Length: 159
Image (cartoon, rainbow, N blue to C red; front, side, top):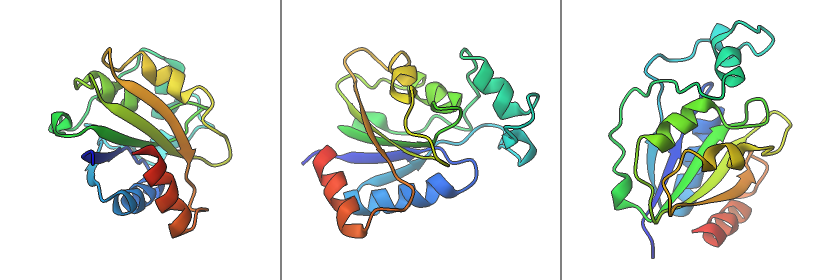
């Protein structure tokens, strides 16, 4: 059986709650991707074109700094990578994370939380940031609608 890590970014706590449930279902370790400067409520105001998240998402080259780079990626075969959907894609901090480690030979399965949209172009936007030889798989939007048995079945099917 492969060794699995659930790595996640959560700005408001929603994705964190889902990631903990996924880690339990997978029997996986848990790692939080944290920005060097935490997001405030004002930073997350998508209706304000000058808010931090709006500015970052409008600049595809934006790479928010990470609080740390101590994830032991080499110890894992499969990474379940969770994030909220922002503007139909993954937040650019996910690119920061993927560009900070060698994922060669790893399987990365995406999961996300969303207020209503699907994955959009999230997988496409992350593939360019990952090491050659890594596999990115679009997983599932997990908004708490799966029963424990359904979540367990999904996790078992991807790891």
